[in-house]
View: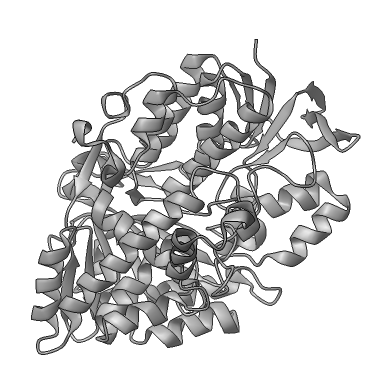
Length: 527
């Protein structure tokens, strides 16, 4: 019989942790404060006013990369992820719209993408520069896999063996991290065209951070996307949450909704129980999928909470529009970016000044071409996300929202060829930073947990194994390795794996180890 494990929260990180820990033989109870499982990976259904059907929206994340994280979690239970939760590969990965009616697709194949870049900006070094950028990204991905992924990390000392620091191969890997450089600097050193660079900047939008402040190691996201693809779970992102929840439940985990944890009992520096809805529930270990900083400040409290509260800054927040359209736009891809006129102006407003951008970039998900079930025939369930600063005391979104909504719609009309969008909207809903803060219990409305800012140490987040409290583990976008669907699910796996190892569990199976490897690291026999 394994340990009694409590998981606070059922976001993708919490569900990944629950499934992994239960597969390792522990008895898991998930306590979710909301009425649904899945956290931000929730679903919104709105009926069409003409009675022709429903519009279905993924409310939170919509882009899935690095699917081997899911494969490993399912393989922990001896299950085949693609059979139980099928994925569709998307290419083009994004369609990009710029002022002046300029447009380019981001496609998976690096050489073909380089040719498209040279057609977009002829006469420059952009295509060759993109290929060299991807070589840098590939090496950074390899170094990240070696030193940062699949293990609990909070700082450089947690992942580099001091005794190895002067070995040539370790020194090469450390130098490859380009510590002291930012994502924007690395990108523009290879791809000087400002619009193409702006497209590549948005790899950092998976982590809710500015490319002008984020460390160069995050360029590795470029290779993760080029080498491992962009995917759509059949049924939408919601299917990922449902797949993980079903996996955990089928293994015997107890998944409880409407169960809010209000206290952690800590005795002698170790977790002993939690209190949910007034009930004390004893446990041997605890995985918190609640925001890491709010876990420390609201549940752990004391000296540890003060240290973590001072150390980290929230990532950005956002406005999300859920627009039911009576006609789809045929020129949109599944994923689209409608870019701002000036990247530096936009990021400076959001991340330095703490104000909404005067001309924002809008991310669109238009999934009906891939999945017609999301809207009545001929319609579209259009998801529009614009990043904003995390909540500041002077922001009153009840007053700010109407004007900013119009600014977003005007941007789509002007830059994305959607001049008649307002006449196509038949139903609508939205989330503001205040809604996100209250609905998901995140830090200051931050969508992506903690900002990845700082050219030396910006990639580091609170460790999945608490350094302050024995038996406390952390999962989610505000824990290592950070935000974005695959990283959040990896954080859950890391938390469960660390817990299992600390309690003398059975560890990862060879099948799970193989399932989570990069394709480049697979043995020749498996190719």
